[in-house]
Amino acid sequence: MSRTALFTDVRPLRSSKRFRELWIGTSLGLFGGHLANVAVLLQVWNLTGSPLWTGLIGVASALPMTAFGLLGGALADAMDRRALVALATSAQLLAAIGFTAQALAGNGRVLVLLGLVSFSAACIGLGSAARRTLPVRLLPGNELAAGLALQNFASQASMLLGPAAAGFLIARSGMAAAYLVQAVAVAVSLLAVLRLPPMPRLPAADTGSAEPGPGESEPEPDHRESAPGGPARKSWRPPRGGWRIIAQRPTLWGSFATDLAATLLAMPISLFPLVNEARFDGDPRTLGLFLSSVAVGGICAGLLSGSYTRVRRAGRLQLAAALVWSLALAAFGLAEPLWLVLGALVVAGAADTVSVVTRAALVQMETPDRFRGRVSSVELVIGAAGPELGNFRGGLVASFTSAPFALASGGLVAAAVVSAVAAVNRPLRSYRLPREQ
Image 1 (cartoon, rainbow, N blue to C red):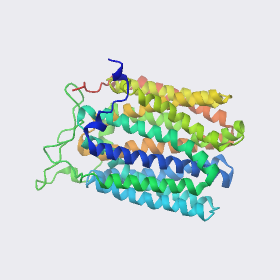
Image 2 (cartoon, rainbow, N blue to C red):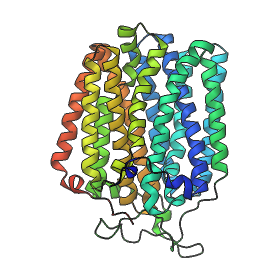
Image 3 (cartoon, rainbow, N blue to C red):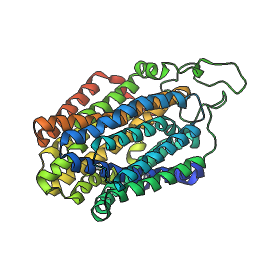
Image 4 (cartoon, helix red, strand yellow):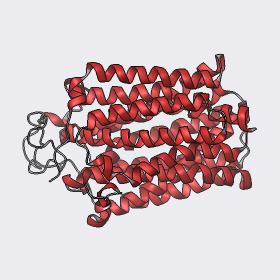
């Protein structure tokens, strides 16, 4: 492997104008989302002063995201996926306007804020499964992993810039300014989606570009969709197939179980305000640096994405990355000096990026097209709701013990569970992605 092959693969940005526009719009939307996340976290903390309430942000987000994410997955396999993403993004824009309005009105009721969090999460969940299937329709198969890595790089960049910008923006101009910037960013993201071509279900002659190659796990029989005007196929029903195919393929359920263990047991964000107040006098700039440090690790991993997107042993790589994530967060819970705290979060962020990109490529390659919406909705539930419930777990444990105990114990237990998954799931350990074409 050449030295240049280790760095970020930008072929998808050059080869597909549609993917490039979507990537830019999505990146701006993510940036706005991270601004709002910090504003919500800080606003709830200011209103309540309780880690339990900051943990409840996760519950308020996870429940509607789970319900509407599963619904969105079924809809994504039965309708135009671009139209579904546009509808969900439009509703998300209304939620962003609501956040701005309540901040300008001086809202002092935490339940109003949590209600907006729930509505926004429902909107995100509704469109997320369909949004996850867009790259495979816009890119050739040999560029899919690179496109997914670019999306994750944008997510990490927005996590780096968003929280740090939010800390300074809130300190200077207040909560409403952060929410207003989010609303503008979501509006730009909506415009990018509207510029995409229609994306109905695939006809029989085109099943998408990311199917398992020779020697790899074969897709389910009859995974292609019927052509327009052709006979009705079973895939038109909103079946149990998404869950069923996951249960039947150890590579899928093992990958999802690994991610769920790492996030549910070790997610630290709800404890950031408590750690910040106990060790760094509650400075909002330090709170922003906590979140940004996770993104610094992700950015570093993204800049070297070629070093792992070309690794074929995806299952083994995801397991190793999840283990590093768990141990790094346990170290964060025990660290005292600021440089060590931020360093542990940088390592965690890098491990998270490797895990997320590897899991996404594995899921896309293992899932036939007619199941992609529903399987992507399961990925959404585990990848989004899992961390939110993990935040609640952390806040609950910390409210009875302490932040260091909640962080260290959660990280160590997560590492043990990931190790157990690795021990019992041989297909995941030995799974290989297709060779480059």
